[in-house]
Length: 511
Image (cartoon, rainbow, N blue to C red; front, side, top):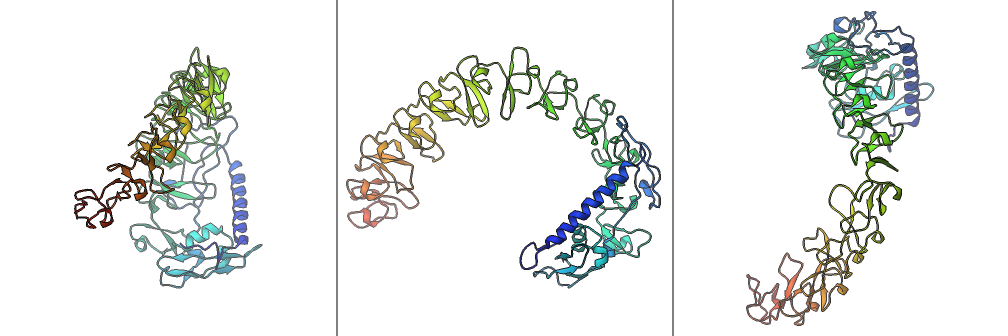
């Protein structure tokens, strides 16, 4: 489908407003209808099409709580695309489609769509279109294929109620619309909403269901207390549940949404939980107070917490801006403020803090927190991402930050992937002229930040002729750096100008 939201044929704001208003009205109506239904799963579908979805009894554990009621299962209802009677220009979707307009109330609606086989939409029954959501209409006209029998739909099915002469071709796979089990290639046709929407479901663990008969052998349909749409479950970890008895491990972690199903757990470390009773360790750690769920924890250092009781004996819960961590207050342990540390200070970088006394390889947030005054980003991948260093030659430093080095020389390394402190001696790395003790830094230009200290003598590294005493810097093709040359026979060259003879051989040596 091609939709145009801008020039030359924008979808009108009134059409969108109508779609939203209609959707809200439909949602309110469905909610009211469902709320008045009796408890339990409904009986036969009045006027339904038969098949496996015609009746539904109680299935699995209802999970009913207090006065909560489950609405009855509605009869299947299918809004056929055929009722829109769309017409097309033909020729596929090789050009921009013009728009068509329906005078809907209270606002008109504009449609721009293209069917990949039949071309641009040119017309349809506006009386039907105006009663439907804008998105539903567009979803129909861009892929509609009319049918009267399954044979019209290839490998799919023809979904048609008894009152319609034509129906719609459906893929008949999981999630496709249906009215009865025969409309599905496998599995069952399952009620999915109070509006009478039904979809094909496979019957596998996790698939939607209304009754256990719609689940594969060995699975049970677990239903929420307030909905007829449940999930097939085998009781394994991660499966749907509404009570502990639904789970093989006898642990069901309820959903934070009272109308939704919970999840089976084995109570192992890092399993989702809402209370310590759902964990074999007896501790459910949450990152902040009031969190709807946490994870099973042993309360060890570094474990998430929102209260002291979520930490092992002797540990405290250091709560920062993005949650808490269990800590013993030693150097390297999590902290949120200085008071969380036994000694020293709390070095906070971004949203994480760690206790430090400023020694070598200890956490830091700034140079002043280090005894030697050098705080550098770490690539350790865990814990604090900045550590105190010595600033000695060969030690890592932050990009172009000379203050990270005791000699004030932070240079890009030869591979170009990192930065290290340099001695500034001849042949050592440099990133600016003042990095070199003697001579100059061989840089190719203002944008180059990785070179070598050179004195310009024959054989020294260079990036241009001005850096050589001889005035000749031989740079071979494909290289940024070269070496100073006298231009004599046998000396390296990058071109004829590098040789006193004016001839540079194919071997890059002067003739």
